[in-house]
Amino acid sequence: MRIRDILRRKGNAVATVRPDATVRELLATLAEHNIGAAVVSPDGETIAGIASERDVVRHLHEHGARLLDRPVSDIMTAEVRTCEPGADVHDLRLTMTEHRIRHIPVVVDGRLAGLVSIGDVVKSAIGELESEREHLVDYIQRAP
Image 1 (tube, one colour):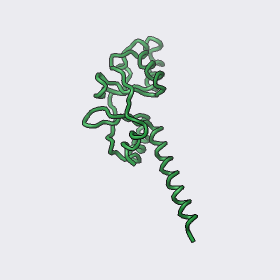
Image 2: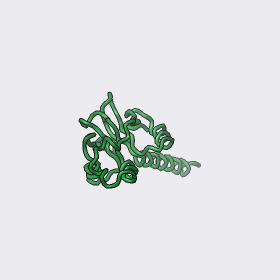
Image 3: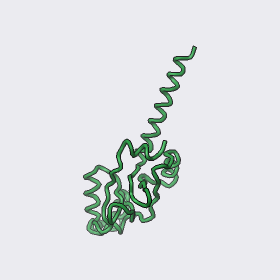
Image 4: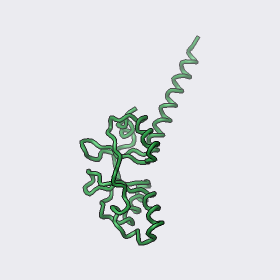
């Protein structure tokens, strides 16, 4: 299965925030969309970073409530791993597990084209296993 198959099912909409948005605005975006991370982008197409709930919690511990009025660029992860729509889901699952990453932006020609979460990847793996199980059960039931 390829990443494009996941995007076909879930869509390619991605919540973004500008690097100069406040952490408070980031939290509002995460709550509004019921998501755990947003891509940080100055224009909705290029990727400056990614900011997650974990980033907020880790920096809150250090800076306290005044963090809420600081720019997202202060807490975002600037080195973002990305993938292309043709990437293999199994390979991406290994990358996400090995590097403890929960969200990976999908890019086409350097432009943001979607976002895949660990939940999306796990859901696709479960779907593949269920399909394989159904085929095996069908095969066994038809055997003489």
